[in-house]
Image 1 (tube, rainbow, N blue to C red):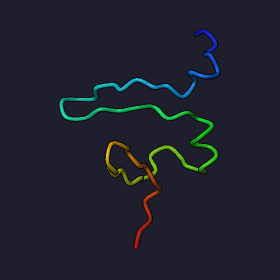
Image 2: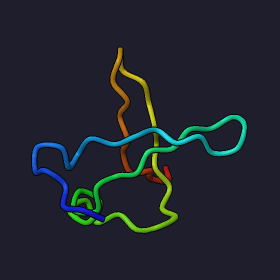
Image 3: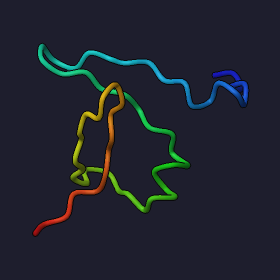
Image 4: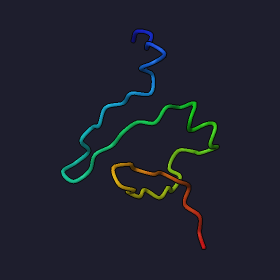
Length: 59
């Protein structure tokens, strides 16, 4: 795998998963900065034309 250009390192592709879902990979440095782990629950919400992803917290 070649080196990614620094201005393009956060550009990602959407990938179809099954019949009803789409996934996107997140940059590992962002995930580590947030302290997130594999299989952690997150909340996904739509704000206009922006998708917001945040940690899920039990109430």
